[in-house]
Image (cartoon, rainbow over all chains, first blue to last red):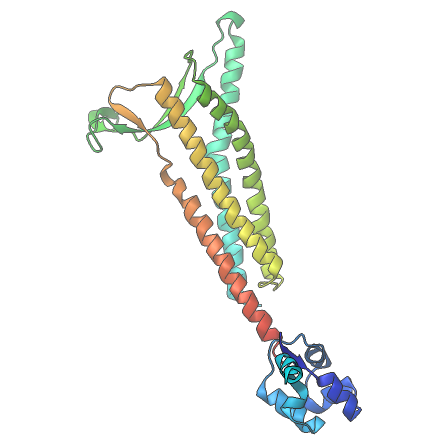
Length: 75
Length: 223
């Protein structure tokens, strides 16, 4: 899939562990791990909203479209 | 676990066992025991005068078309003769006519087909049992389950193909050996068409299950 989840990068930047974040956003560590490893097929707006709120970031910081990288290099 | 689904699975299992059991009790066991009895009776006869009769099964149609009733049967309740026609003949006779080569080859293949049919009759209930067991365990949309259902579908279609082949060989052999007075021998597989129907429905069901599995997987992986 061309959508990359950069949750691990944001978590590292905010210096927050998976368990800590899962408690804050009220998502099970297993589900958060699925999201972090890029195995997730979809993400709810509500989940994205809580993640952005806790990590103090924008949706674009968590999700990235792979094609954009190639576009930037071409430009 | 959905109780209704559980009950349906158990009912399906019972229905399946009944169908198979009925076939064995009504058809296979009487044929087997009567042939053994005949064999024992034949052995008592003088070896030189022993005869080896064969059984032939074939469908017939009155020469003048259906519903012409070329035969008569006696109603013992009132002693009256009634007009009748027979759709299926089971004949047991000694035959010395030499069959053509292609028919002999076909009959040899029929032995292989019979073993295949026997294997399928054992294989299908085992697979059905495994599917029912996994449904009871709540692994309904498991990919192994879907593969099993698909295999059941193909196996049922294979049973239909075997039945079709058997009927073709039996009819061809009967046409080669007999010519009846009021009837002509016709190719028919009678009610065995339901194997084709069940096989296709099973395959369709497997495809629906596959789509459901994909949807469930997407649902499970939506965070």
